[in-house]
Amino acid sequence: MNIQGKKISILGAVRSGIGAAKLAKQLGAIPFVSDMSSMEKLSDQIKQLEELNIEYEIEAHSEKVFDADFIITSPGVPGNAPVLLKAKEKCIDVISEIEFASWFCKGTIIAITGTNGKTTTTSLCAHVLNEAGYKTYLAGNIGFAFSEIVLDVEESDYVALEVSSFQLDHISKFRPKYAMILNITPDHLDRYDFDFNKYVNSKLSISMNQIESDCLITNVDDRTLGLRSINTQSELIQFGIENKIVLGAYLLEDKLYFKNIEQSEFICDSQSMQIKGEHNIQNALAVICVTKKIGLTNVEIGNGLKSFSGVEHRLEFVKEINGISFINDSKATNVDSVWFAIRSFDRPLYLILGGKDKGNNYDQILEPVKKHVKKIYAIGSSAEKVYEYFHSRVETEITDTIEKSIDKSIKEAENGDIVLLSPACASFDQFNSYEHRGEVFKKIVNSL
Image 1: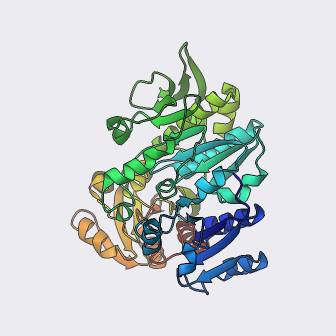
Image 2: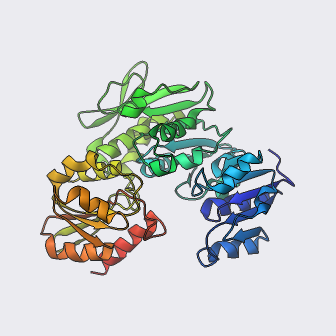
Image 3: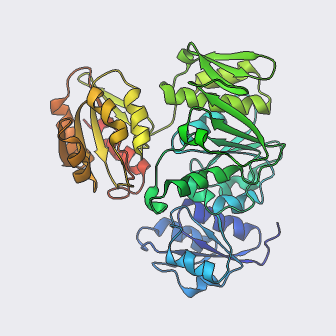
């Protein structure tokens, strides 16, 4: 698509917004970046924009935003933001950064979405492909913004793209060769008028532009996906642990297999993988599906699965102190993630829970918490809600901060116990991101 001379307004001056602005400038368009945040918070981004001679405004969305051929919005801008509603009134097209970048991608896109497991699965997919000699870029919500790397991608390359529902909300022609939906459980409901159906439809839109030669990979065990009729023309491949698979990947007696029309093929033993837990088996099965379709051998896939050591901030071992293990699971920003985290350990837990609440319902984790958690430390703006729900069921204390929680846990936990940061909430009440939250946790633990 030729965008030379086009006026493009970009909402949001963080990673994806800056990436889109740079790409637009490289392709001869006239980008204008607008962000509501403060000058202090965006000092690094402002420096980049000034070096590139890209016009911008901070702390406001002025009328200049609407002097544009189209608008690119960052994932952090809610769909009901006044600036987007006004753009709709003015009939100005609004697209996401992944939509924009996809227009210029020569390589093969593997787009991965789901409520949980996106980061691990996307990282694992890129790892397996790269280990087998297929040049693969890691982008989207992890690694680089899609816009930052898209012009480097050759026709023979792959892009493993982690895609959120917010990015899918503003796609129109985005068409991945391989689309993957890992699971769908309630999350971000505050962004979808507390309507789960709106969130589900956002996730399902990942395959809306696919054609017969494309491939959609879904989780046969996921209740929400099982109840929905997915409208797609692409080939459907499934993975799962609990249900029978017609075409796809499955687990049998701790062994991972891929089943095609003719036979089942052994890939690897789950015990030989470095990443543990049922959720990571699901992630590995999803990766088996896409890499088999691409053409990797069973040995190549198995070797890649076994050599992958995991991702930062997802059940990441930090340190052991006096026999107490500290685990960083800061990326657990919803209740479903915490359910998987608790089930990944067979030792008593001290759980650090809370942050910016997104409409959490803790009923789902009540039983595993009662069974495995000795005590909950409630932090952040949702500390009162966490305390009110759990204090009559399991020992719970409002500690407000991660530092106080760690200080308490060192005094209260015993040899063999685990202190687990798995907040079930967003981080934006006390931190810039879940990464920032995890880094703070690790810094405090490592200083002990």
